[in-house]
Length: 230
Image (tube, rainbow, N blue to C red; front, side, top):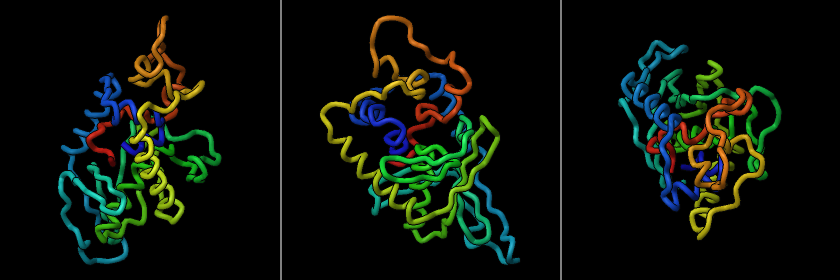
């Protein structure tokens, strides 16, 4: 839910305030990926620096977690233990950002290696684990489209960004009408709620998109919403 707020506030309102949801090939694909992750289970890696067993040698097949500090809950798909640290690993259908450069959300500067919406989801999982006293110093995002993994370290700027996301989610959730639609955004044509968000005559481009538009990010509708912080 919170990652969709970062991706598009209008989409967030339509789905989570008005309760409008349209299934698509992307949502089905996203559910399949999450189910495959659940069947694979979790891994616990031995420490590289010690012969001792890690403090959590066995992890549950799925981890439902709640944060009283942030007021959100979520379901983590995949955990690893490495050097006595617990690491959240998120798998995304799309590609990692191709072009290096600064990324931001409102006045928050963000790491350039991941899309802001993905960063919000991963960061909130890390925050919830830390609230439970686990040493979550970093998280990882595997982008299937580009076959690449990016690492996100925990930091004070990341924590400030997460608090701002949750505050904004509450603000948008109180709105009687949804925010204005995005203008000339490459996010819109592949969105499952495109026709609801921007109704009008004429054909709507759906999946026949150039690679630079259709696969440059993991759209939120390609994810299983039950597994995201909310």
